Image 1 (spheres, rainbow, N blue to C red):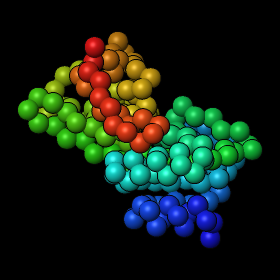
Image 2: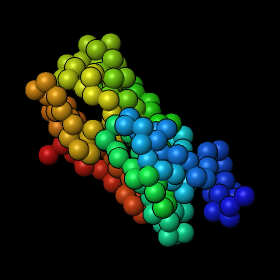
Image 3: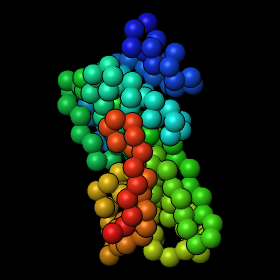
Image 4: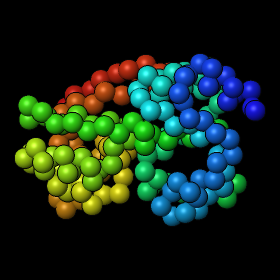
Length: 167
């Protein structure tokens, strides 16, 4: 087994990490060669530890949400793909929705509808995740994420948390 994978599994209990993963299996266009590594954290603390380990190991990192806006060359990716699908909770309460980066936009829209909260119906048909949608200000049908997001907590490339308000 690869030394980096052994180190990752020892440092980050419960982390799923694999070698030479075909990216075509994770993109909507179904193209792309292998990534050196694919890691699938299940919570923000695993993600934070993984970002720090990759930085310290000088391994390039690529973030993967739903794979709907990603084209990968046949040669693949040198480095680690961090697949965020496992960090996908969405909750509603007190007029606010909290959603994790890997949550599908269709789930976000469904939770908003169930909580009788307006403003996210446009997101139901977008084939992406909350993290990517917030990052790129995804929109459709006259709505966009910046119309609905009030606060974003993020993790930077050094594994440190930050926060920004909508303004």
